[in-house]
Image 1 (cartoon, rainbow, N blue to C red):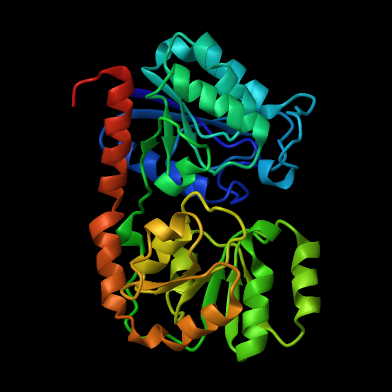
Image 2 (cartoon, helix red, strand yellow):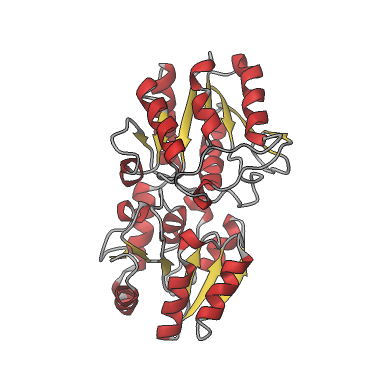
Length: 353
């Protein structure tokens, strides 16, 4: 199958600015390329990959949809990079069996009916914008096979919508199982308000626990605000790392703590933690609800409840780390991810298995 993927428009692919969807794109591409399919990725200038053929295009990056007000109108920067990527895709569409957009932007959805080659969309976030909701739902009604999402709970944020639920997956060979943890906890994500870093800062200050923070420093001011509000917190910002470095550092932690303030579409960091044998303690909000096996591979607690987080941390040693790794192997392998996406692509193109 000849496939053209369109990357996120908020940052260059490979920099981490796009968040978890970058890992999804990389892993799906890895599997498809290994199986002999042709995959090209259209992405903003500065994008890099050692294995994926990339067409990097100049243009102004888009803002994060989740940072705008819910009722904000659609706005396009001058010389929009998503405009450049969609124009490129339109010009060369005849070379491909299917085009798949991973961009959480209005324009790709709007243009779906203008393409002769099928244009599908993997939606990487839940509902954050009324205007985007309308075009996503409209596209799903007109092309009911063309919308893919991570989880059922993500799809439910858009109301009743036809969507293929694809979950996620990782290359388990890149994650080392760690039987014996060190005495610290991990928190992984973009340093941005929707990720709820202030709650883990409050938790750290309350319990006196060390928490290592991994992720892209999207908002320096937000980081400083969290540190200033909770001066007793034992937080250390470690930085943003590639997969190999991240798993090596995070894998030694007693648990991964997730404190999302929004409905996480999935939460790739949760399955990365499980692959290392690290239990996951998360608010019961969004994607982690469909990942964590409560009392078996981690704990799901009442959202925004610091006391509940503290109680879960007190029980973390009851979780067998081997069960965490086993769940990752059973549910989130690279092969399982790739075959789910391939089945979706064949559903759209009517290609034989």
